[in-house]
Image 1 (cartoon, helix red, strand yellow):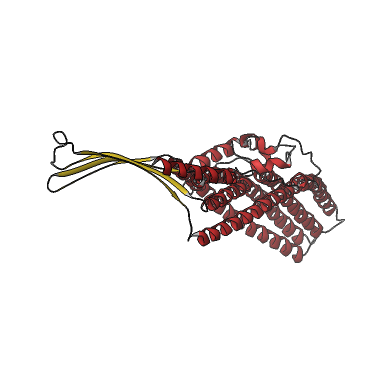
Image 2: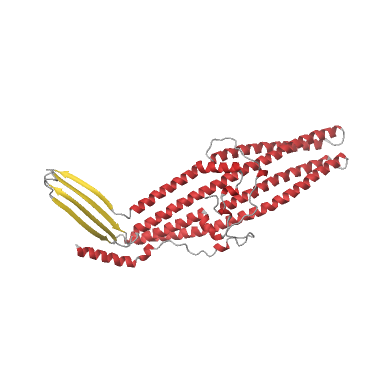
Length: 449
C-alpha cells in the first residue's frame, strides 16, 4: 500500500514540475496605442479626470439629484445587475468549496439483523490546476458582474440626467414658441389695422396668419414631446406616469473646464472595457483548465466504519472497516476530445483579446467625440447669443422704419421669424453643451462611486 502511494506521489510531483504554467495568473498585455487615444485633443490630459468627480458635483441641480437617487434605489435594470453579483458570488463560493475535501456518513441495515455504518471522505488533489483555474475564472466572473453593475449604474445616471435636461430644453422651446405666438397675434392685429388704413395689403396679413399657424403646430408638437418624455422619465425611476418636477434651463450650471484624464484610466474606469478584459481573463483560465485535462487526476478517498451481524452495535460491534485509496487517472482515449477543447479555448481567448483591444479603441472614440461636441457647443452658444442680440436689434429697427413708412411689414415679419429660429437654435446648442458634458462623463466611466 505504501509503495503504491509513493509511486502516485512521485508521479504527481513530476507532472507538477512539468506543468507550472497551468498556475500562471492573467496579466494584461502591453497595449501600445493607449497613450495616443487623445492625441488630437487640445485639452490637457492631466491625472485628474472628470470621471473622478462625483456625479452630484457635475449635476448640481437639486431636483435632478433627487431623481437620480430615486433611480439608483428603484431602477429595475440596476436591481437585476445587483442580483447578478449575488449569483456570481454563489458561483465563486461553489468553486472554492470544490477545492476542499468532501465528507459523508452512510448507514444501512439488512436481514438477518446486519448493520453497517461508515464515515467517508474524499479529496481531489488539484495538483494540475483544473479546480484552481475554475476558481480564478469564477473570481473574474464576479468582477465582471460588478463591472456590469457599474455599466448599468453609469448608464442610468447619464440617461436620467439627459432626460431631465431634455425636458428643460423642451420647456424652454415651448416658452419661446408661446411667446412668439403672442407676438404673431399682435402682428396680425397690427397688419389688419394697417390694411384698413391702406398702408399694407392682404398678402402681408395672410403671411402673418400662416406664420402664426406654423407656431401653433410647433406648440402642439412640443407639448406632445414633453408628455412622452415625462412618461419615459417615470419608467427610468420606476414610478407611475406623472408630471416631473423640474427647474429651468437657464438655471443650470455645469463645469466650465473638463478633463479626460490619463488615457490609461479608461482601462480601469470604463465598465465595458473592464468587462471585456475580465472576459479575456476568464478565457485565459479556461485555457489553463483545458490544458490541465491532459494531466492525471489524483484522488484520495478514505472510509472508517463498522459492521455487525447481530443487530446490536454495543453487544456485538462486529468488525471495524478502514480503507484509504489513492488513485491517479491518466486520460488516454479522451485525448482527442481534450485536444479539441484546448483548441476551442485558445480560439475563444484570442477572440476575447481582439474584443478587449477594440473596446479600448471604441472608448477612446467616444471620449474624443464628447470633447469635440463640448468644445463646439460652447462656441456655438456664444455665437448664437451674439446673433440673437443682433436680430433683436434688427426687429426693433424694422418696426421703427415701418412706422415712418420707410419699409414694409414683410421685412418685420422676416426679422421676427429669423429671431425665433435663432432663439430656438440657441436653446438646442445650450442643450448640446449640457449633453456633451453628460456624454463625456459617461464615456469616461463616471457616475459611480
